[in-house]
Image (cartoon, rainbow, N blue to C red; front, side, top):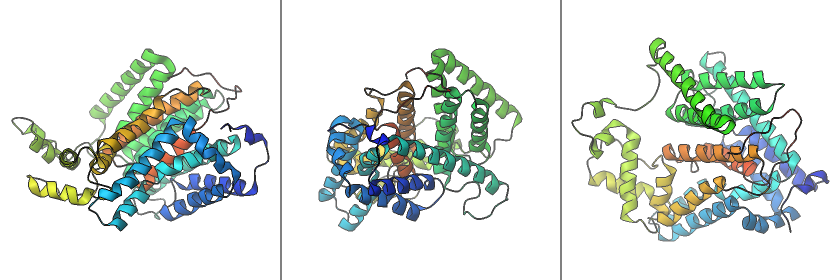
Length: 411
């Protein structure tokens, strides 16, 4: 059996077709609706897929696609680690369910192996992100008063991640489309403004700047990278000199570092709450580095470290770093599986176009950066978006259409 998208020209079974359109609706709901809508619209397609012959592609997919393989192995290892966890089984299973995206990525790849479903999913995601950007401005300027947040539909972190991805999509669209290039560039500029002056957050700053620099490198190599850095430097200088940046969020207590005679772990803990999370989580990992403490054990293990040494912030149940969150609970084995999952995005695949390879690189950077500052796959919102992006980008080779396009370089 081969895993390709040749079926896209054939009539699809009714259950698969219904599941695909529910999935597309689910993709549209990710930036806009809550968990209940996601669970319904993304859960039903899985049930319907299991009732069709297309599920037979699953074993071959695990053999041919490294991302599908490592995501499945990671989910299984997370489940196995429950056996040596001291947490209550119900709680451990609840945490495992938060990582279900690793199990579902290969299943959604099967849907997106059919070209028309993949294209419609991309359109749905783009339109949802565009609508989210538009609503963000309406909320900020008090033109609508429906959502709980003051500047965006979802929380600041999700908004920063999704809008950074949206900005990169518009850059790529502008590079490949002559006809609508000006419109895509304009949307990119508006998105950049939104992340710095409307719904500002550290992850948004870092991610949009990094993806923009990556795009410059991908399109024009060193000249493009230098050009993007120069433009960014001039923009930053202008903002510092002429704009009020008091609202920007960088670090909680920078004065703790500037007032210290020497930089120690204790000083870093005082400087920002997440630095304390990372330091104590690292101590917890070192206590059981091989197999970890078991899934669901993080709150209790972190609390023990919090009591054992001097701390400056409250106890947490989330390290806000996916690398640490996984390694504390599943040890070096789980960490290596997670890193292998990420690295699989950088491995060249036969038949992948230069554009698809560039998007894989951008996805690797997005996953890497966000997981350094958040437990993104454990978070339902971030993890759901990442699951869809992984299935869309890292599944099968895209069909290329030369009309109105310029061939990008490989990354």
